Image 1 (tube, helix red, strand yellow):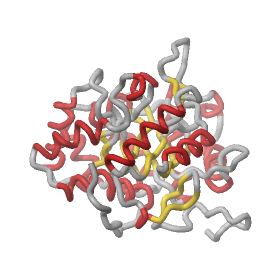
Image 2 (cartoon, rainbow, N blue to C red):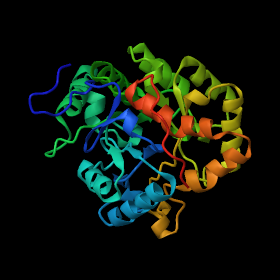
Image 3 (cartoon, rainbow, N blue to C red):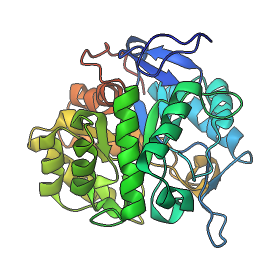
Length: 332
């Protein structure tokens, strides 16, 4: 795909660069850790309830929190996996990125079951693919902010329902056409093998797929299966102890590392409610760095593997690049 006439980068114009809300960022320029599954702007309200919202009321808190993580831990990049139907606001992502001095990736795609518009169920998959490809190539909304990921798109059971299958198939076909990767939502960790089978059947390489929320599934054999097939295994709800303790997460992570799959691991916190923000008393986006990674290191995992899981893996997942960027100076 050639560069666009308007000067914006084509979707797959550079396999060694990340598409951020501010433009292309060379992989070599990302010297600190990456949070590959977060939400900086979000609205998942259904049938009342105000908890699952991150909007303009929280932008200042989010920017201040990310600034602190950049200064203390060298946080370099945040991937916002808020896609269509989740209250996506790419303009807010650009504002947070500028205020915090941290690169941010926006996403496209459709979420899962309860959040899928009726149109997805009625449409032909090719029509859905066209919608995604246009957004990837032309940008989101009036500001034409280019997404750098398709996700989080997924399912809620062991096998996707019919509309979820359409959304996943469209994500895979759009990824193949544009060079982006796909990150999934596997509710409570279930359904990862079925998601992977569906996505790869559409021609998407497994190394361009991250299966989400696997730290919520106490099934080391499933984790090994996904990693053996070449997919990334996302332990992306670190700190959400209402779902699973971090002690259990650590056990599952160490089992995957002991099996030799450190190069398939992604780690993040999936902040999805404003109560999780540190400014409102929550564990925040930095729980991974402040609390979980010290426990990982205490269990005998060295700094090189930590850098692999928190920087090189997410960059390789996002871009498909095989060459690792050099690490920056240690911080924190």
